[in-house]
Length: 328
Length: 287
Image: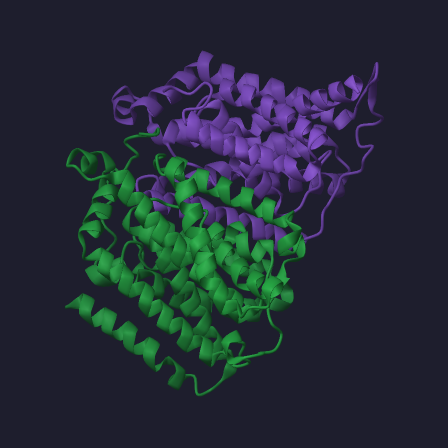
């Protein structure tokens, strides 16, 4: 009951939001950014939340999507839209390639390997002139055809992102309620126990990772569509990976609407502190950001939605320890 | 040719000793508590700014900056333990990563806000002229950093393996409950570990500042170096960190020299991933 009420309230808010903004561009843009962050974090949630494999390198997939969208425009004159499937395909292939050895690692080892791969890719992209090197690449400045999806108003992006988010959440929900969802949650609780009961843990982790990668690439492409510019830091920077993780964890990782709720809190906070503190240097925004993250980790380790749904204090600390500190 | 190669190797060993020093702090905390401190590189960054402030405030060189930074960072480490780490240790892994990463952002951007984004450097001649031995030229700050790095890392190793305090810490890391029954306070030992680990980054940072640019984001790069060193040497092993640190210093130098400076990070990251994939327990870690 509580769940239905919470989810209904969030859904109503998202649908009614454009009416509430009364056509003020700043708020329309804010709404689009919230949805974009929610798409990325929801994609991350599949592997990081449901399967409990905390990737800190999803920027690889985000960047692949973002670069693909603008590279097809820059090199072949195609609308950036055409880059979305290309980016998603590349991301899925990369996920299969790096996931096979990396997913064998457990706990912190997996997280650190994903950071290293992401940094590796970032350095390589920075030195790859075909995609603009350190300067990055730009998209179409003005819309040549409607297919370019280059709008001055943020409202079309809001609806586009809303549609994509609905799709991502539908996929997530289908998985959550399917056999695979049970497998993933079993792997998260104890991979060894899941294996002993016959769950092909490696295979299902890889499926979740590849799916998560493809959807993250879509988020990256949408970012590139809206901003029309991408460089190594905004595509592959470590903060991109971290933001997906933080948004999901703040809202509630492993919960369907957790990432959306996280985005609804964190993105406005980021934008407000940016505009309030902007003149004093962007640094202070991230100081606030860091402080909030520390407070969440300390007091709400399971996220806001978990508390809302349970209507209670965070669960009692349980002795969660990596039982297999080394590769299985 | 061979003279240049020798120069590269010696420089690599010297910087590697500093890597070993700050990585030993990371490996100590990992081995004892199974917690990764994602703010470790930013601890080094704080120490670098401390050295910079000691210089601007009263013209003190490394002799003044090293103890000051060690004390300040040890305090930061103990505070981080009591205010944050002690609480998130028992929580889900995601909360651990979030907590120390949040701390990293907090420290990094506090420095950004307070000191600005510009690079700061200590004067080149803070320790006088470079040494010349045969065909090899060694800058005095690098020599000092390498020597101190080596000595302090060895001292840390001796402290952990040869002293009563070290035995108590080992007992806590093996079984906190059993250690508590023997009259050892686990929390106190873990706080000591944080003090030692952060103090080591304090010494390392104050030394690095004498020859390296100090910037708010320098911790990001250094943290990855520390991860690589720890993964390579084996999680929880200080001697492993020493060997790995020296090795990585040399590999970095050689790949910068042979392939090109921009690719030195690529080689190190690649090495890291390969080590994790092939031998996750590291060179000297327990299987």
